[in-house]
Picture 1: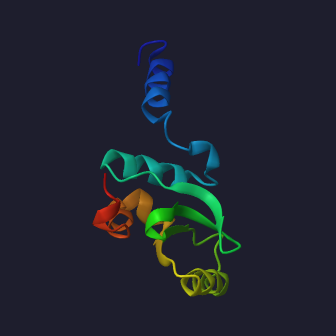
Picture 2: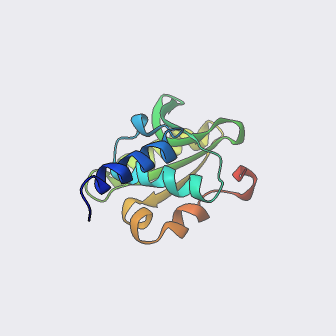
Length: 119
């Protein structure tokens, strides 16, 4: 790789993804997920905001839709179930996607988002 090629590539990525709320993400999988959504024309959600008192990863307010990116390392099934129940009780639809799927099977992330959220 020629000298400076890495910096040029980084600048290209910075320009390409500057409109995404990467600063709100709390994991690489969340950041990659935003790039995946953007790449196929899905409206970009609000990221890591509170809904019904609980922080949600991706939120589409107008659709009352939440997608959680779950890491096997940091998420616990009982806590995930509790938060899902709170959101569903408040009238939200919740889908969960494993962080490994964002990397290895991004179609599973895309399948968690209904067609009406596509741009």
